[in-house]
Image (cartoon, rainbow, N blue to C red; front, side):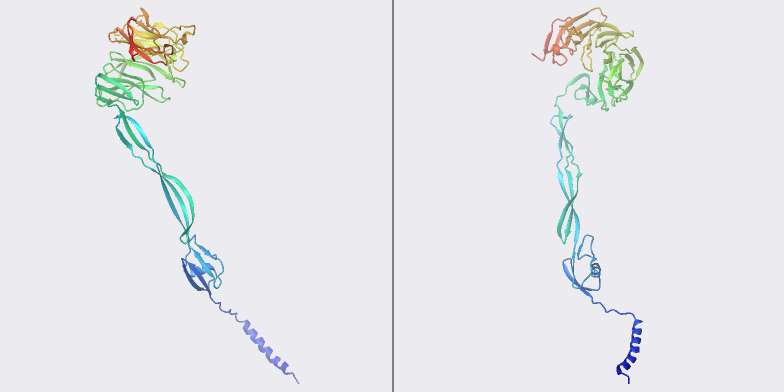
Length: 467
C-alpha cells in the first residue's frame, strides 16, 4: 500500500515546476515608490513639495525656482533627496558702489605787464578734481555681508585758477622826439612820437638782443634772431618801423657778432663768428663786412673790408667796431688794442695797445668806444698798468683816455675810473660823460657814480647818485 504523502508529491511537483517556468518568462515588476515630501524656504517663504525627484537641484527645478550665480543652497544641489528634507535657498548678489572726493584746485597769480597796475583778470577758471573709489558690495537676503575696495583712480585732475595781475605803471602820456625801440619778451616794440603809440614790430619770440639798433632816420630796425646750435649763432634781419603791417626781412647773413648802421643810414657793417661747443659758444673771426641798404631793405654791393684773422691770444672774443659820425671810418676795439679802419682802405691802423685783462673766465673785456661829433677824437677806457709789482694782465686799474683818430696824440684824462665807465661825448664834443667805480680796484663788481668832465680832463664833477 502506497503512502498518501508520496502520492501527493507525485502530483504537486509537476505543477510547481510548470508554475516556476511560467513566472520565469515574465519581468519582475517593482513595487511603486512613494513620493518624497520636502520643504523649501526661498525668498522669505516656505513651500511644500511632493516630488519623485532624486536630487535637490531637480526638486528646485520642479518647483520653478531659478538660481542665480551667487545663490547658495543647503544642502548642496547635487545632494540626494530624502523624505521630510528641508531645502534652504539663500539669495546672494553683488553691487558696485562709487564714492568720489573733490580735490581742491590751486590758484596761480601771473603778473602781466600789459595790464594796468592793480587790474586783475581771470585767465582760467579753477575747477576741482575728482578722486574716485570703487567698492564691490556682497549681499545676502538684503543684508550686506562684504565690502571690498576694487579700484581707486584720479577721474578728473584739478584745473588751476589763473589770475592775471597788471603791473604796468599808470603813467601819463609823454611826448617823444623821434622813435624809441626796445625789447620785451624777446620781441621788438616801437614808441613813435608819444609813449601812447606803442606798437609791436615782431611776433617771432626769439630776438636775442646781440644786435638791436635803429637806423639814424628811425625808419628801420636791425636785429638778430636766435637759432639752434646746429644752425649756428643767429641770423640778421631788418624791419620797417613805419609800415602799417611790418614784414621783417631776412638779410641772409648769419653768425653775427656785431652789426650797426652807418650814421648816414645808407650802409650796415658787421663782423662774424663761428659757433663752438666751448664757452662762450663762439670764436670770433675778427672780419669786417659792409653793404648798402636799398629802399626795399635789401642788401646791395656787399663786400668784405677785412679778412678773418686770429687776432692774438684773445681773438676768440672777437672784434667790436664803432662807426665815425661822418661814416668815413670805423674804430675797432679788442681786448688788447684800439685802432681805425678807413672806408677805402681794407686794413687796420692801430692807435694804441695795452695788456689784455685776464678774467679767469669764459669772457674777455674790450674797451667801449665813443666818437666826438667831428669824427676826430675817441673817448675810451684802457686797461692800465698795475700800482704794485704784479702781472700787467692782472692789473685792476682802468683809466679814461682820449685818442686822436689819426694817431697824432693820445692822453689819459681820468685815472682809475673802472672797466665799465663807458664814456660818451656830448653833442658839441666838449664834455665827456662817464661812470666812476665806487670801488676802483673791484670795478667789475662795483657800483658806479655818474660824472662829467671836459675833454681835456678838467672840471670833473660827479652828480648821480648824489653824495
